[in-house]
Length: 249
Image (cartoon, rainbow, N blue to C red):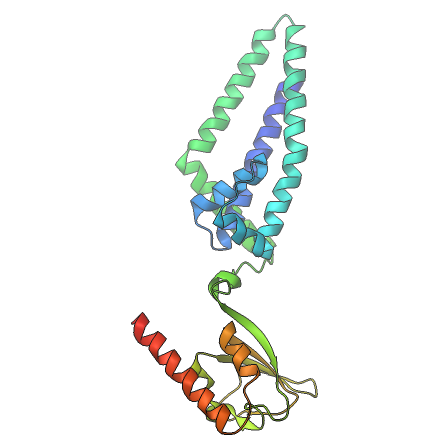
């Protein structure tokens, strides 16, 4: 009988781990169904290759959750298999073998009801969500998806040198936003950092800018010279951005 109870306990723990992982993945922005699918896929070792799986691999928090599930699956499946074998071996040697099977069937039936019950799922999910928010400090925002970093956009550092079009000018005069480039911060040569700089901020040589925008535009901006050539390049970039906006609208 001990083997049967041990088996049911292992299955219950596995179920709880899957539900916890599903709730944790859902907190990172995945839909409930996608989170459940990925959690079960990782726990069973199926390893489906999908676009969602690639998004999980790029997301640091989701990746840690899936790695933990993979480790648990290696230990848990072997334990369940060994316990199940011992259950039937012991049952075959007992006069009350039917009692072992009855307890096992009843326990599996109870687990099945718990996994299919909407009420139980809702209550357990609420408890897991509360525990994760209360006792963990996971940075669950998916900034890669949020900023569309995989669609030609990126957050890039740009080092300003003397003679660059950017050097020794105010941000308001540069008009980078008109080109579709946002300045998120400025690293000064003396170590200071200016987060979300204003239009009055002057960009100096040796500054390093943290920019968000099209990677192609940022590369062009990095090589843009001062003078008339740089001004014409700015006008061209602004016109291209306006055409893109009009097309989107």
